[in-house]
Amino acid sequence: MGKKIYRVEIMLLMVFLKPYLFTDLIFSNNENPKPCSYDLDADSYVMHTLNSLESSKYVSSQAPSEYNTTTSYNNSCAAMEIFKFCENQQNSSEVNYETNYTNNPSENSMNLIPDLTLAQHSGLFLCRYMTIRPVYNNFNQFNKIPIAYTFLCIESDYSLIFSYITNKICGTILLRNKQTDIIKIHNAYEKYKSCLSKKYICQFLESNFIISDENNWKFLFYQYVDFKNWMNNTYKFKSIKSGSNYNQIFITYQTKIFEKYNDNLKDALDLLLEAFNSSNYNFLYKLIPIYNLIHKITMFRGNYSKSITIVLYLKLIISKIEIFRYDFFGEQNISETIEKLYENNMFNKLIAEIGMIFAEVINLCFTSKEILEVVEVLNFIYFIRAYYNDFYKCSEILRNVVDINSVDEVLRSTYDEQKNLIYISFAKTFKEQSFYKMLVKIIEEYNITQFSKHKNKSSSKNIKKKQQFIN
Image (cartoon, rainbow, N blue to C red; front, top):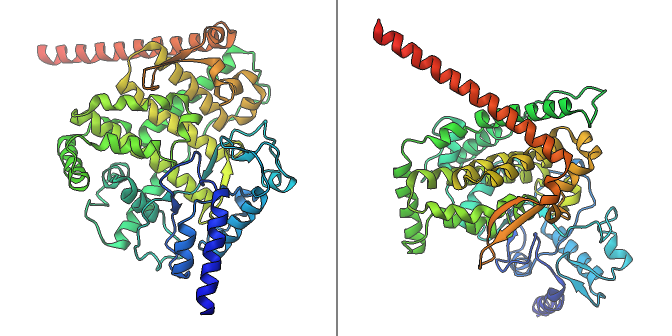
């Protein structure tokens, strides 16, 4: 009898607190996601009660280096975090749903973000992957939750298959679609993670580096070009673009999608759009403006080669995000503001690499010189922020171009009737600046040089062929 009364009291308390809780990710979402965790030792009744609630947007005050990545997720600690957040929010009379902070915050609530004021705060958060449909596999034999578990959760949540991109990046067949051996799955994703965790090494800037010197900008741009080449080689862009059995892969994907959804019109591109529109990945639309053009991939429905090429690129982006989350958050059920993440070098490198991967998708969808120019310039600045951060911080114009609060002053966007972005270009005021003119000049000079090299190379090949024919 006493236990029943206790449980009723707990449920009443949960019902009372629920209105004060927010979703745990970037924007509100009806999926009601749950932390990606397989810790089943906790009392099932408490787990059910906690998971029935929307998660709090708890912000950690810990530095990333202080995270304990070896301890498993503690559900009682999660409950304490939820209650602590609600206590701070309970007396709030007015709530700003865009930032999830009160317009008249109490001292306690502001302690959650001691280094940020409301004016400085974008309202964007990132936390570890939040699963919709937990996958219960026997990973308890490992010291900590492996990265494989996250990928299995993503496959369950969004019906996305990662076996082919894993094999492509690793250069060998490690996974098959119906693989059930936990050890093989674990080892395959550990190898995949290792391949995607390689580091690009850039040249150091000279101590007498002067921002106003055009030659120094040329140096940075050629470092960026070297980074592009490294990305092409490391992430097998050429191999992804020239797959030989994409027809069969496309048919396999369509068969699995039809078996699950009973919908002949749905394809892998639709599943990826659903994933990127979900609360796990929709932060990309804010951080990378060009990402809002992703809906254009639907033009390739039915085109086997281009559909699978795009699918592999986008799965590569998801993989990079999850590896960062896994390394940064570990097993801690915490979130971090985007502003704080921008202080983290690995996060800036993540954005730079995502920009480069997505540029491959844009190149398949668009031929507009203006759009491709925006992609190139933004990716160049993402690169500088990631690898020459001190220089980036000294340049106000670089910061303004990629700052999410001032991007509308730099870019001009065109939308269709459904409010989908269909065109993007630099604003006239930005094009009038000397920085833009100098950068465009550097890019054009480089392109002309590359075209000449390619032309000379082709001519040399033709001459050799003629000589062989004569001989």
